[in-house]
Amino acid sequence: MKITVPDIKRMKEEGRKIPVLTAYDYTMAKILDNAGIPVLLVGDSAGMVCAGHENTLQVTVDEMIYLTMAVAKGRRRAIVVADMPFLSYQIIIEQAKMNAGRLVKEGGAEAVKLEGGENIKDTIKAIVDMGIPVMGHIGLLPQSVHKMGGYKVQGKGRVERKQLLRDAKAVESAGAFSIVLEGMPADLAKEITGSVSIPTIGIGAGRHCDGQVLVLYDMLGLYGDISPKFVKRYANLKEVITSAIRNYMEEVENGRFPEKGHSF
Image 1 (cartoon, helix red, strand yellow):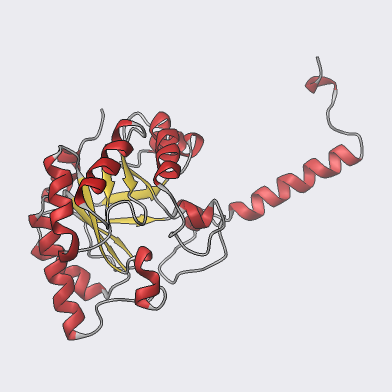
Image 2 (image 1 turned 90 degrees about the horizontal axis):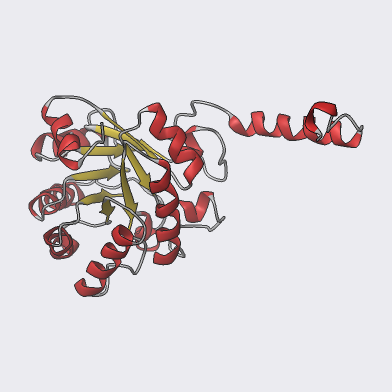
């Protein structure tokens, strides 16, 4: 059965945890969907793990549409949420509405994700009023990496903590159906989770969130340029792939591939 936004909201009400993973292409999306992941996030993290950028800031709307379209074709059951990249929603609300609409109309997204709290509540509301579900994102904001001075834990101080609580409430009141909590103390994430009615999805925010999200390439051991503390590697596919490639090279170089069974 197809999962919808009300289903995700209901999971919080019923106390069921929500697993989320990033996806960037048709093949992986199909694997994740068949495995039962309920939410696929087409993250602008693709700029780092797929394109080799230092951060996510160079990713464009057109690139996100292409990636989202590929993921949407690979899923039958999961919800597809697309990140709105840097400069696609921060300038004027009308532009934000157009870009969100393109991600749905051209990319096949069923929801979009925006970074920010009180500062973008009007933008979230405008997109929701169009009929497009929005996932919020507060705490460590990758698109604000320069302002934050790097990928640093947020909400450690009393003032920051109060601001993040206000941000969560603002995102909720603007109509978002869920909110990502990234890079913050676990006790703060727990407090936020208990103070809002919408599901919280943690990444580096402890175990008390309503769900968790990881970058697929991180948890599969494929991407090693950075190694965040919060990542758990459930496999080391880098080693598996490397071994397969070396076996292939050896067989080609020694004339063992292709064999008769691989020829017409």
